[in-house]
Figure 1 (cartoon, rainbow, N blue to C red):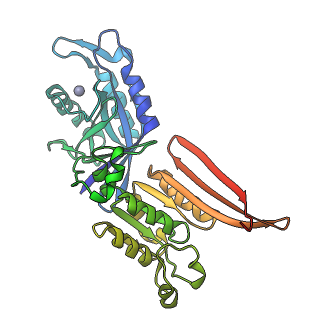
Figure 2: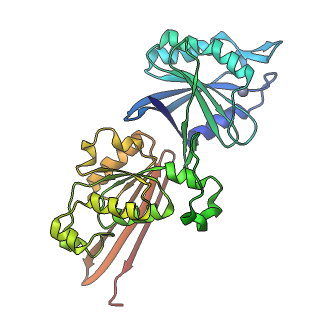
Length: 350
Ligand SMILES: [Zn+2]
């Protein structure tokens, strides 16, 4: 059973801003982050929903570590955990770049503090979140007695999305050599990234094609439909034989992906995505390539609920005043970020 932590970047930016404020005598500030949870097929998901700064007056002078927080601040955090079904993460900032580690002082202070939260909310894990200037790491206790486990999967949901995966490593992929400018560990990050594509028609099949060439290594494909002859003008990978045999669209996409990268993991769901349990929640990014606004809204609201960046694509050809217009959109949405890109151009015989 693993636990994944997804933190919206605007949330983490606000926490950093609070923790950077100087204090009269405390060398570093601390705070508390409260998380709701979601169930994943592979474990649990922690989603931060609120943050409590510690008031200036709640820091006490201390001869050994400079300053510590008083019982008042801890009681406020405990009350939150008592009132709400939440996980409490004690949070502080290390003033450097790169992955933060837990110091000996952090470890001993956490051992004293974290058990308090099990007294009021024993059915939830609690722990510590340490931020650096550009990264984050978290430790989780599942009960008062056990030693903490370090979370192997922390994501910062922003632009760009940052997947801070501990086990992420991969031999350099020669087919990706031309995109090495993206960074030294990019092959491993792309290989472990899970991308859900809802709808494998004219839009989704192009997305699957582009992503497998880019090096994405894990696909969740959702589409209940089969290939029809009228799809062949736009469905990447589909053949005349697929139309004759009514091949499932997810099978066409899986075949294309395997043809480019046989090592890619493909989970295919040939039913509505809503009927596939928790599967879509696993995704690091969701592409919505569906036909109707209602279908878009459903995918988008699920993505929003689980802090998954959502990218919507769509296009249509309409007739107006005797002319044909093609209109398309690429739109991304994630916690704290909204942007819209629309294009519309007239089709001509050229
Ligand atoms: Zn520390």
